[in-house]
Image 1 (spheres, rainbow, N blue to C red):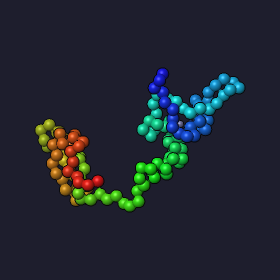
Image 2: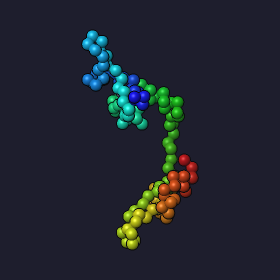
Image 3: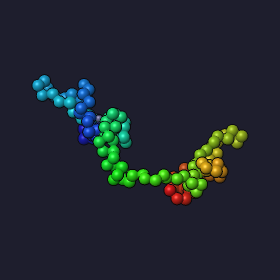
Image 4: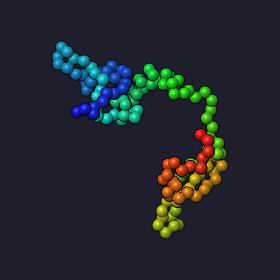
Length: 127
Ligand SMILES: [Zn+2]
């Protein structure tokens, strides 16, 4: 199979489990896990252990490369709108009522279901 991939954990082969042990007697090695899919770190790691190993070894460099947060990000009244919905049992079909909720002011504004589902539709301004 060509779609097998290796766990990206730098120490994966050091976690000496039976499934990592390969080879014939006298020529055995523990090897990095190889699978068609993994469940951790966007499918890159076989376990949280390997995911944490990667971050321990490369995390600081990755953060520096992509931009370290050096001042607080701020949720303001202008960008605190979040899409949500509630079930309205008073309505004939009991269908979901979609609305915008401002997480700071608690103001609510009506949303159509189409606007709710449109991931590019927003009334937020700024980050
Ligand atoms: Zn692994």
